[in-house]
Length: 195
Image 1: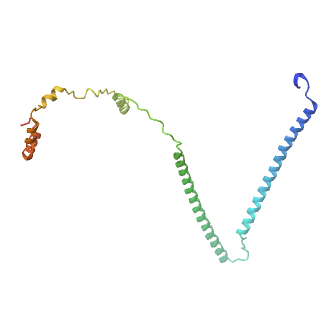
Image 2 (image 1 turned 180 degrees about the vertical axis):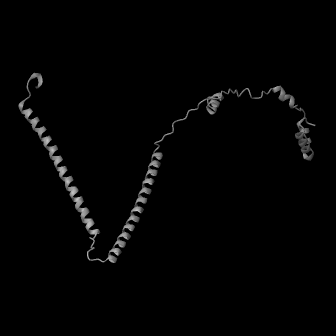
Image 3 (image 1 turned 60 degrees about the vertical axis):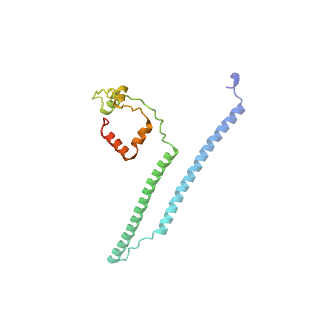
């Protein structure tokens, strides 16, 4: 059905069907080509493997050999197997080392990129009671008022302890100069009352 209840033009309908059919045939054709290429690649790999093995490995000739010759052949084969095993072990160790190094370098790269961003820390005001509860756990209910333990100091007490000498400062400087003045200072420091 087209616009206004009319049927679509038969020519347009046929063109649409042809285009859809071509798309289907193209996708089927593409799949068939890719399957053929994949099969050919498998055959090529198998042929390459056989060619390589035929070059590297010569067929064993055991017919007509004596017992001692067979034993010598077995020893040679065991030596070759040991050499190959040593090489395989060395290559495996290098591979494991490289894998660990790659992991370490990836971690360093992530650290350098700033992948792990530190969140901004906020200053938190915690009372002494809350700190003690956090340290000691909820079992201990200790209440501590830190200000209550402070000594109270009055100004009057400090003024009574230090009598202020009012006088001519020049006389004080002359009296304290020389060895006698140092002796007076030493004696004053020894006795808390002055003399």
